[in-house]
Image (cartoon, rainbow over all chains, first blue to last red; front, side, top):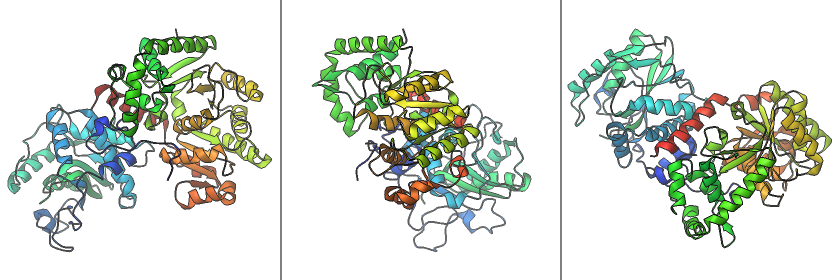
Length: 249
Length: 318
């Protein structure tokens, strides 16, 4: 097919720095390009937590997925991709190393691109917010940077992403980090509880279906504790999740 | 002087020539959005990995040896623009049109008569054939009037036919219109019959813009490129009347490739096979009523934020 506009071809995530679309790319272009190199979710994955499953319908061994629905404070968490090469290294670099806001812009495009591509699944969402990071977090408040980028990249204003100038949910103080390596359930849950306790809600969310966005999902402890505050305390109708990357089991 | 030193450097890169060829202007626009990047290109490197970048690298290096000729060309062109009372905006500048920053084949610079405004981000192009029917002229005028009432800025191409109807109706209803020209800003208005319309657009608060060298005469290659800027400057293109050989059909395809909205008036979508096909393939929206357009246009502030985010990314690097 000939192209009327004679447009260049995107390079390939994560070589975004030299891609013709680094500055001009849209969520559609960047999400499509990234899908060629990032590792997709497994063909069979848990409908609740996006975890790899050995076969369709196999039981998920993630602990929270086996809780009774009324006990779990989020309904499901989708993921753009698996936490694997090359996405994993870029998230780590952005989050822990250089904090380059440019990657926040690229990730913001991937979030909006995912929303655009899954419009039917998120059509009933009333509010999209990030899982807040602590004020002064170094090298960067990574989730706030991604959500602020996503808000701007949603140029048509299709999605109810919270206006970064009027934050809905903020973190008031630094809390103990969740275990960086390995999955120690109790430590994860303790850290998640402390994290949720440090959050402050600035706008009522009563009756709203909320999509909570985070960078990485491991056990769901954070989604559960933050979801608990939003649904039980603030009376949100539902908390659903979306992450850039699901840590594979 | 209408150009800053940096703007002059950018224009100089555009004016470079080797073997009677220029470096690809869209490539220049993509890769020269910060003072640092400008120096990289002037140093003979292109910070982009693409087929077009590879093709242009040797051309750039060869042409840099004749940079004095390029500087002289720029000086002549800037003088002509200044004499015409035109101003310059480039990809280096925060006030470069926001919508254009979101397309990969953006122009490195624009000369303009009349102000470019932030509200131009919420805009639509109304385009169509030069050989318009009376119905077509009436539909173009009606669409323009309805959009003006919704505070949408109307872009078109200053051609006769549909373009003329769109510009004229916008002005008649007190709206703002921008003409994207296929000629240089200091050249004779083309077509000559629209000299009066061009003057009226500027006098009534609109703007004329041109992506070409100020002295450029009309040529067969300038109009298709102009269509890229007309599409790129707006949130979507509305095609009123266009046969399969019309430039407006090309603009519909370009707008689709830009990821912009393509709006095809119902009478067009039901009569022209190419238009019906675009609608059937989900590449265009058939417009029966105004809300089909309005409900899909975003707000200007959001586009400005997306554009500023891109400029910040250009300055900070990745």
